[in-house]
Length: 314
Image (cartoon, rainbow, N blue to C red; front, side, top):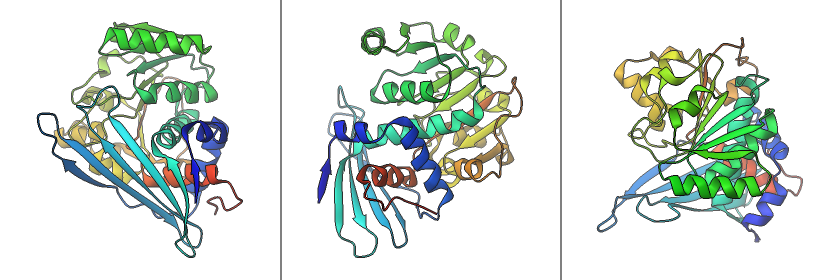
């Protein structure tokens, strides 16, 4: 069984390859059940979560990701491993760093959505959250949009400043801010990757033409936006409809409150890549992509890393 560490995964998954792998898998017949989530008690700290995310393509590959999310753990709250199996005989093929795989496929999915939902001239990206996902999201968005300005916000000023300095040193046009409202009011794309349970981005702040990319809030009780964001959206896309309607807090809570009807969920990534929906129709539309992460994306990315010619295909 082969092992792929984080550095190897990054080198084997440049953003165009991630997006191509996801697109191929979304067009294919891949089985990806809604993930199983288990609450794990932690004495004296907030409860953690154990997530199990399987996916398979008949006769090709089987994969499963094991994820732990422990909000009380600092500085890293998420840990993961991914195991890839042969779909014909069940033999384990590879063990991959699940955190890096998750970061690549998550940002790749956001970039894939933004390539159809963001304005073609989008130049200002606001990144909400300075955690592990932020760098990949910035890079991925920059790979599909002409971003020349990135404003990074975190609840903790020191975290925002440190992350922005590191990204700027790596050549990215990133500066930190503590004024989220002002940044969002000037944004072309707003990308959120936090563990927030209360709205951070408000619909009243969005100018016409903004694309909102929601990556955090992977549980129904979490959210990064208020109901007004969903009400103002002309198009709401999710990565996987079943998963988003069960766990995507921003969508689930807007539906429960009556802020939006179910029909306002325009479609999911499969609909987008299969041509059942076309994406942005005008420059002044407000668009939303809600990602909760689903196992098809992990399988597509892991198979692309493994790369022996057996990639997920139609």
